[in-house]
Amino acid sequence: RAVATGTQYFTSSADKTFNVTNKQGQTIFFKQGEKGGLRDLPLSRKPIPIGKMASSSSSLAISYALTANPSSVFQLVGNGASAVLVFNKNFTGTIPNGGLAVQITASQTGNGSYNAAAAVVREIIVKKPGKSAFFDERRMDPRYEKERTKFARKLAAKKNLKGLIDLNGDGSVNALDAELMFDSDDTDSDGDGMSNFMERAFGGDSLSSDAKSVLPRSVNKKDGKQRISFQKYQDTYNSEGIEYIVETSSDLRTWTTTGVTQVDLNGAGTAGKGINAGGGMERVLFETSGTAASKGGKQFLRVRLRTK
Image (cartoon, rainbow, N blue to C red; front, side):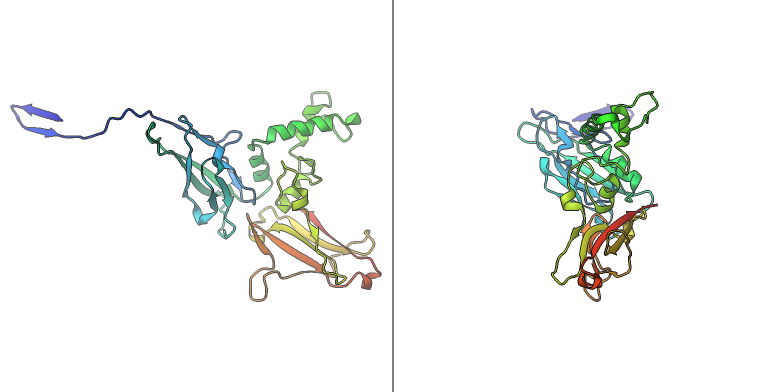
């Protein structure tokens, strides 16, 4: 209690009640802008494991919450160390040139030994998909350095360093030049047979061998027609202008888009022909209008990618 008195003033007082405990304080550390921490993200199907990006000085588990989530662009799955951010499959909003600002709050409520920690709020920007956003994000991935070193070591070990030139201008061709090739659209960073451009176009992970689940696949209905299915960016989010050109051939030399149609997977009366795959992507199906028999017994189907 505080009391103020004086000959020229009325005596006044004020009471304040507070608790004094013997609990320890704690602090939350939430990584951002560093390897393995939060970073700005392009719209994609890639999940972000945020559960291990924050920790407390008490070693108590962290809770996460989306405290600003425009157009519900994200979903938070799980909590504590297993918390994962995933792009909402039902997201249909627009992404402005400046991106969407998302806020994630990390908190720790304390226990019998520790007081609650001050919550930490981090903000990230969801960007339009594109080449620059793709490479910027993966450079902050905790796997990046390891995969780049492995890639450079393998390439530099090849006989005569075929296809490698002095990219850094130091007068020699070595692993440092190989590292500079790592962030090229034509490079297969993870050794799964898909270039970085293909990974981006089909929604793959360029730092993990995932070709089997990402590459276009044939669909056989035993009616003599050829079909191919793959994931592509929805037109709304294809800001890079990637073209998915589906072509057919009877001799693997001459290819044409004539005689190829997209199958409507949504049914009559529903907008679009592809099935929403989340992260601004959709799964589509194309088929030939004729059978292999009608083409002389052989008919092939492929999808070719092109970008500006």
